[in-house]
Image (tube, rainbow, N blue to C red; front, side, top):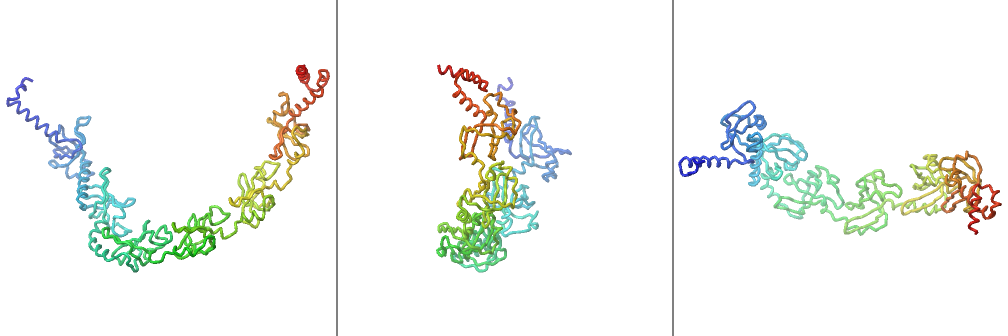
Length: 576
């Protein structure tokens, strides 16, 4: 290091100049920048570039140049622009990309054209949802052309525009995402702009346009052609005083209509028109109509949720599906009416502020539920036919009325299981039932079949709790005994725990079925039709009677109770 100690000698100064020149070259080369390289060698697979200041030669895959259409550049001495991605990778090589450089340069050109408001040259290469793809001829960048920007008039076929070089206007750039949107329509319109200004200036608010032709629709209105030189818009709200969901409900392509000019915009070169303002507002005649009065209305449109009807020309209202029928739920207006029908309806609401009129078709007829309530009060009997059934109920169609009465399976019989009894009935069967409940406001009628028959539970009317009765054992199982009181048609269950005091004797298997035994009524509720029977309770009652009657040790020895002596001994101690 001693030779560099004196920096004033010529050798040190020369070395300093060499170092500075080398650092200057390297400093100009930064990752992410576009640089220019000169081809100095070409092989079958690679192109080698020479870039001053780099420690090694950047290499391009020849297939990358082929895909870019730049194979003619693969010659010694040709200059190629590349993006410097890495000064040095893991292998110590320089990474560059020609395709990425082309995209960046292309985007820079688009940004420049957009900022200068200059048109660009491109060609339509394909169709996509909502429009087309346009390729920038200079850089190959791809841009989106919305369908509405293809031309100044609707085109059914654009095959004549495909792959043809033409001008486009850049109307939107997303620098963050790198997306570009172009317009052909703006280029076409620009040529006509001067002429269009002269045409628009002819119109004034209030002018009448005769015989304008329906040209096209959109979700927000209808376009009309005026003498073939200007397209005007009639907004959806200006088509009719009635509600219009889409222009095709009113207009047909090619039809001619008179229009009234309601707005003129010289900046946007737009003329707004109206059809409805050519006629008086029919809602001004709403004072001629009264609430709760029947009127004839004309069906003009059928929907799943109801029908649009006209009280008079231009004055329309919605007949909702809930107001079609008293009894049919969720019925479609398409099944009841057709367009052009004249039907009776009652006006139920008039809202002048919201310009809304509500009508009802069902109110023109009597409420069948109110009629039913008057004809068949609760407790009366009525005959009906099984109209339908489900897993737990039957619906009966009442004679003479369009009403389905609800009959639950639990109200079919007193004796059998309700669901089993339900299986015995089929559609078309005639039944005479008793009215149990009527709710006209809720449109509900509930009836019962078993209520028309004697209640076997009435057998308990003269019975009381702790009374002894005789029953016949019908069957046994692990849970207990199924028994039927003598003279009664109902079966009851004596639980296993209620068979005997002694747990060893509380075995259902002791009985085979058919035996007659005595038991006691443990619980009785006539209102709830509930009765609980117990053999154990009878034993306890008899034991208490025995203790009260034979309260001495000697007499107790002859009683037929295995534990009576123990009970007497206990009682004797208590008496002392």
